[in-house]
View 1 (cartoon, one colour):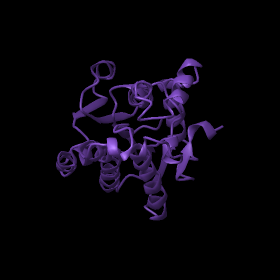
View 2: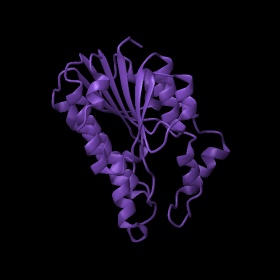
View 3: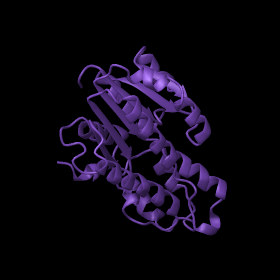
View 4: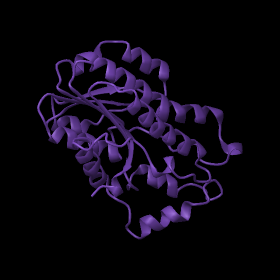
Length: 247
């Protein structure tokens, strides 16, 4: 990874996000990580390189307040390469419309859509002098395939895909953007899926089988593919991609 690389990452405390953070740090990037909690183990391994901000991305007002300050612009100042990895996401609420609490819907939309789009705009503005700015939305196969019980998750991930498609048409100087599906990864979200009442998610058995048959990728495996693609010359040639289609 080139020197003078600054990466902004959401949801870095566990699963895919923790693996993404570790890879970016190991390759020499300074990482500004936003999450509700800290990753003390990772911070201990990379003192001075991991900069953590405790922030609930479901609170759009608080996020807007933080973005209005100088922390982000100060972090990317002078960087030749600026990366934004919108990783944080929520699966809930799961179930038909009759099962969805409006407050849970609002929280999912805030974390899965509002926060990534707010950060994307803020990063592009803060990094206006950087010759190379790259934004990756962590998407899902659910963005491209409708699943019963997942109307909110499918809709919010599809929003990220369409955001990347439209932003690519804007012709922003020095910006590359892509919404990347990381494959089926063995994370806490997968455990949440397997713990869902089949009445709310009729396709649960499919995900139970993936776990039983050892077909889930590890967070490290998927993170490696995402970062390799993010840093490649091919990144941003297409607005959406699935890492399982990369050769």
